[in-house]
Length: 249
Image 1: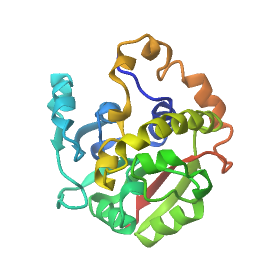
Image 2: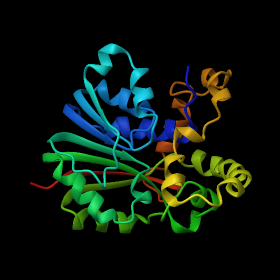
Image 3: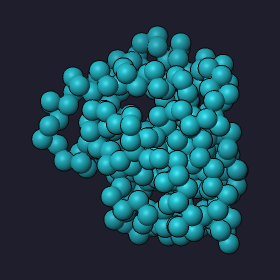
Image 4: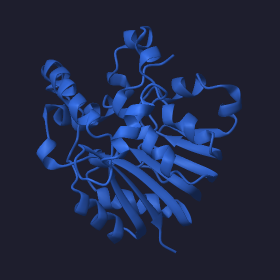
């Protein structure tokens, strides 16, 4: 059983709740394809995009029945033209790494069918900026009103911003900061692209997946905590946002 970080598990819980199933999806920044597998249970086909060099390895680890319904593209979304029409575009923890975030949202919109759904997640609030943001190549954190404005300007409506995972992911952020401080000195000469490429599953020590931790910490054991966090979703308290929006006709 592979280890999945608590932040991912809380994010996954909220994304699955909001997802509108359809024929096809595209996931930008698909990383180790953990969420991609969940999306394939709700769509007939999908396309997973990431510029990290282990995408093919993650694809090879999928069951053949999933491989048959998934295409992968090992490219940088902002530098490579992608064509097609999809019912849903998903991009988790991507926008904060993109210099021209408006252009990213416009490109994502061009891939959606009329009234198609875009779901993104981003780190919330500049006041929560820490050394961890520097370590993983974040260019910014977002405010709620800022996200609504960006989405509306880029041609979306039905925009909903949810501050997810409170109080749990806020508490866990202290652990991320401690780990980042230990690692930052080793990566002080890395550029932003290198930082970004190591900002996902590649930060997780391999021994975690070989330990008892994934048995104790998974989507089933996290579920009651996720239910509690939903009580706070309408309050702007978390250090992470999930944004759902629809392409206007």
